[in-house]
Amino acid sequence: MEQKNESSFTGFILLGFSDRLQLELVLFVVLLIFYIFTLLGNTTIIALSYLDPRLHTPMYFFLSNLSFLDMCYTTSIVPQFLFNLSGADKSISFGGCIVQMYMSLALGCTECILLGVMAFDRYAAVCRLLHYTVIMHPGLCALMASASWITGFANSLLQTELVFLLPRCGRNKLDHFFCEIPPFLKLACVDTTINVYASFFASVIILLTPVALIVFSYGRIVRAVLRIKSTSGQRKAFGTCGSHLTVVSLFFGTAIYVYYQPSSNNSQDQDKFMSLFYTVIIPMTNPLIYTLRNRDVKGAMKMVLWKESDSR
Picture 1: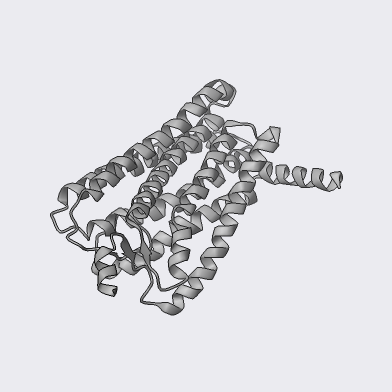
Picture 2: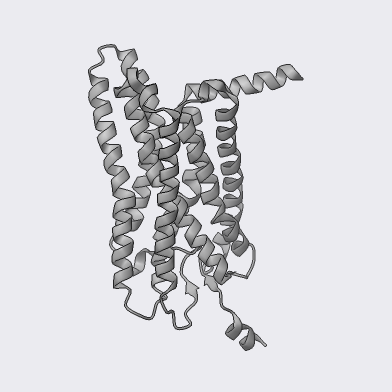
C-alpha cells in the first residue's frame, strides 16, 4: 500500500528543517506569532491610510499597496510552512507548488519595483516640493502601482512556466521550506543552463533596476537636503525618507545576498534562514518601521483610538 501511495504521489516533499525536529517546534511557535503580527500590523497601516484624510497622499497610497503586498506575500508561504512544521507530513501538491512559486515570485518582484516607485515619490516630495502635487497626481500614482503589479506577475508567469517544463525524472524532494526556483532547478535531470541564465537576467532587471532608481533618487535627495541651511529643515527632509530607506536596505540587502552569492553545497541551511528573514521577518517589521519612525502614522493611530474611546 505504501509503495502504491508513493508511486501515485505527484506532488513534492518540502524537506525544510525536517532534519532538526526540535527546531521545528520552535519555528512553528515563532512563525505563528510573527504571521499574526504581520497581518495585524499591515492591516492597521491600510486601515489608517483609508480612515485618516491626512494620509490620503501618494506616499500612503504606495504604502498601502506595500502593506497589502506583504500580507499576500507572507500568506503565500507561511500557512503551508506551518502545516508542514506541525506534523510528519512535509508534502505539497503539484498544483499547490505551482501556485506557491508563482505567487511568491510575483509578489516578491512586485515589491522590488514598488520600492523603486516609492523612492521616486520621495524624490519628488523633497526635490520637487512646489510641483509635487502636479507630478504625483492620482492618475500617475495608480499607473505606477498598476505597472509594478503587472510587471511582477508577468515576469513570474514566464519564469514559473519555464521551470515547471523541465523534466525531473521522478525527483520530488525540495531541500527548502517552500517552492522556490533555485532549489527547484536542482531537481531537473537535464541541463538547466538556459533557465539559470533566464532567471539571472530577470533578477538583474527586477532587482538592480529599482536599486539604480533608488540610488539615483536618494543621491538627488541628499544633495537637495544638504543645501538646506537650517538643521530642523534637514531633519524634517531626512525624516520623510528614513522609514523607506530602512525598508529598502533590509529588503534589497537580503535579496541581493541570497540571489547573488556564489552557490555552495554548505550554504543551503544558511539560504533557508535568509529566506525566512525576507519572507517572514521583513513583512512583519515594515509596519513597525513606518509606525515608529513616522509622526503622521502615529498621529493617525492616536486620532482613531481617541475617536473610539469618545464613542464609548
